Amino acid sequence: MPSLLDRRSLALAALFTVNLLYGINYVVAKGLMPGVIGPSGFILLRVAGANMLFWPVWLIKRERVAWSDAGRLVICGISGVAVNQLMFFHGLMRTSPVHASIIMVATPILVLVLSGVLIGERITPNKALGVGLGAAGALMLILLGTAHNDGASMLGDFFILINASSYAVFLVMVKPLMSKYSAVTVMAWCFLVGSVIVVPFGLHEFAQVDWQGLAAPDVWSLAFVVVMVTFVAYLLNTWALRVVQPSVAGTFIYLQPVLALLASWFTVRGDLGLGWPQLGAAVCIFAGVWLVGRRDRKRPSSQVGAQ
Image (cartoon, rainbow, N blue to C red; front, side, top):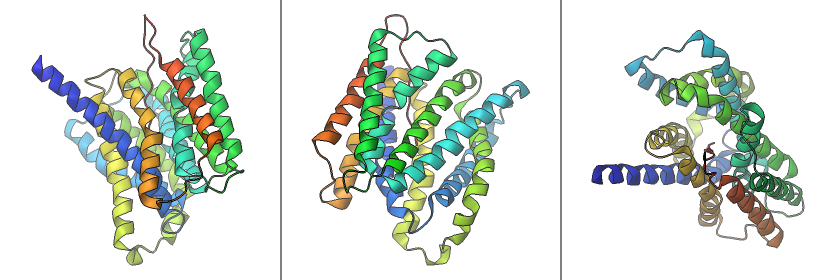
């Protein structure tokens, strides 16, 4: 029993670390775009770096994938890597880190909707109300983005919403694969598929980077996003899911807006452009997520957020 408790404590610490990395990423990545590297070029760097880290790990076990699962892997690579990452970085460049992190909290709600449509999960009245509140909060943030000079924009918030939606598709579609293969195998193939799609979009911006003239802080920031936010975060997340239920892991996404806000405050040390309207939008999203995330007696909902 003590060893089990220790493993659970480590898993919870791992999940906190994952979402801490995601929260910091909102500020670090935005600080690099577009001055150091364009968003599409940044995605190419991140996906290429992830491939260089995931595939050597895969080679240790060399788990084979059935051809019958190839189509699903392609869909997961498109939704979970290509569209997800392209929309996140393009959106983050155009909006504020706080707006982006709050909109991403709607991901569990989107997962519920897609689960009901694609796999027939029953949507209760509480869950339906939660979906409505979350959608209202996200819409409020998008509309308010043009009314305040806080670095947010309607287009940027909309891109982040597409990012959240594409990742929700990924979470629903990847479930059958996770029951058959290891997380490293699934992620390695997903990032490989994603890299094929990202290359045409990011090659020009990647080539425009003055790699020789990069300042040391920029190099460390780029390495942080590739190694910590991509590789380490995915590994910690998947390891934690071996110990705790997905519903437990899903609740940790709620920390991201708070952690992003703290990271922004430590970096900016000034007015973040937040007011009562933004607070009301955030309350709508958190209330909606809380209603959706309430466990049913028969089966808990499963949501995990990522970048």
